[in-house]
Length: 225
Ligand code: NI
Ligand code: MN
Image (cartoon, rainbow, N blue to C red):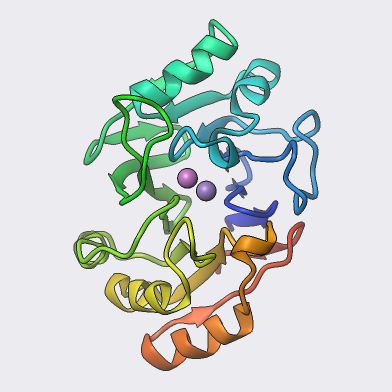
């Protein structure tokens, strides 16, 4: 049984019982975070792009835990400049990488990279018997339909906060394109600018797509049945 814990914003911890995978570990300075960067344990960290609310504490957590950093080379370069000698798994768009817990594939995202020469990305994550799509920061784009066609997704983590990413209506459309039966909204209510009525998101998404929306409070754990 894979467990998913939400730490607020776009930070999730996936745990298959043996391996722990952390996404976009923005903990220091994140008003929603329920764990400190000094206390989180993980084996791999997936980074979507170099904005501070995504790359976050990744270099320091990797240095303390020995976790491997997964990301675009330019983004990993930012980590390396902050803390030299970290374990790195550079990838690029469309590529897959096999890790001890399963496989990750780096997907497109429509967003700026936060570092010159880089691009923002998302991930399809195979862990245990589950397939997850972590969209990172992104606008709605029609190739999401391709992602859902290639990988039979179980869960999709989608940004809904608007302003910097998709808002409610576009994220509902994204759920429809992806054909994921379970949607987990993220990247909202961290600051007033991205405050959203997540209950309304659940309503419109469940009306539009064949999906159940799981609203997670920061600190909450979901068993991915
Ligand atoms: Ni961003
Ligand atoms: Mn962001």
